[in-house]
Structure formats: structure tokens, C-alpha cells
Image (tube, rainbow, N blue to C red; front, side):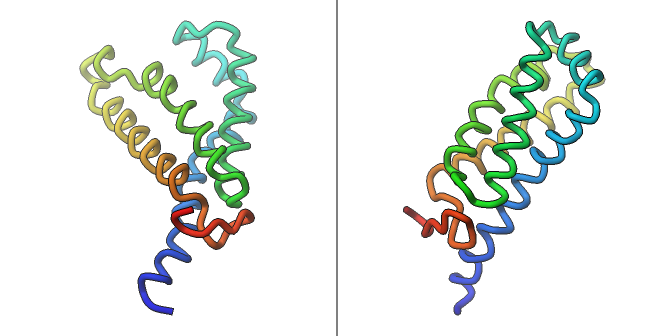
Length: 139
């Protein structure tokens, strides 16, 4: 097995693990801190906070685990990609915060943009060979 093949085989697995961790951990923390998270979401003026929070947990935890395992990873990545768009615009609007928070919110905004890039990569190329779907690279 050459270096390129090794990178393709194990890189996709490691990449999925790294991309999914933020969502799996975040989903679990939202379950544990449901009331606090609901309060924070309310402070942003969101309606039906409890419903949105349950949907958020389902998307983060469910899609995160699907990507981690490589099961229907393209669909999970699409769900996360679409989810991250409004989350980024609502919770990381660096252009509309106190100047003391601008840099932090800009960093979070760009982190989410990078995550969206990773999700587009999974949508385009699948989960890779070490996955439950065992998709070949490039299919």
C-alpha cells in the first residue's frame, strides 16, 4: 500500500472522526444543559425554542454519529451543511456584536465556514472505504 492509498484509506476515517466530534459532543452537551441552551436560544429571539432545540440535538447528534460511522454520510453531511448556515448567521454575526466580541465571533464564523467545506467534501466524495457504507473515494 503506497502513501497515497494509505492517506485515502485512513485520511477519510480520521477526517470523519474529527469533523463529527464537534457535533456529537455539542449534541450531548445540549441534552445535559437543555434549559441553559434553550435560554440562550431565546435570547437570540428564536421562536419555538424547545422544538428547535430538539431538532438541533437530533441533527447534531444523529448526523454527527452517521458521519462518524460512515453510514449515509452524504445525507448526514447535507443535513449539517444546511443546519450550519442559519446557525452561523444567527449565533456568530460578527458584524453585529459589541466590538470586544467581534474577533471571537469572526473566528467562530470562519470555523463554521470551514466545517461547511468539510461537509461539502463528504457530500461530493462520500465517507470513504473504512465506513459502514464502504463507498469508494470519488463515487
